[in-house]
Image 1 (cartoon, rainbow, N blue to C red):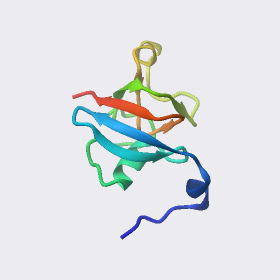
Image 2 (image 1 turned 180 degrees about the vertical axis):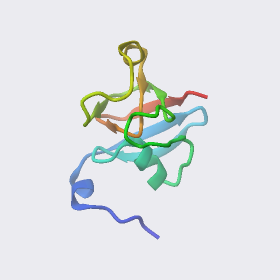
Image 3 (image 1 turned 90 degrees about the vertical axis):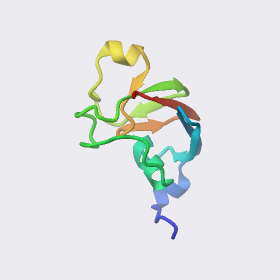
Image 4 (image 1 turned 30 degrees about the vertical axis):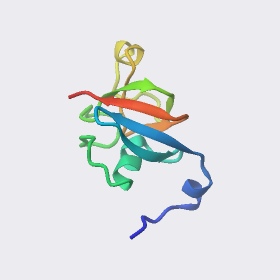
Length: 103
């Protein structure tokens, strides 16, 4: 059964996302946080709890690509941001991305 989409999702660019290790691939619309896009693709590889950028359960590393945040300050320190850490529950893809699980 297809997952319903909104007009904004249909009109937004769709990027390729890969989760390492393992190389799981999924489509990541620019209109969805990476966590939600992965779940809609049937992937339950990313742990989550709050889904608003505060609990940090989903923290992982951006290996390549770019993400943007629609909140002022996701729950990452400046050092973590410099090291490439992202919170996929609130990180929206701005290009094709590869992310590495923190486990």
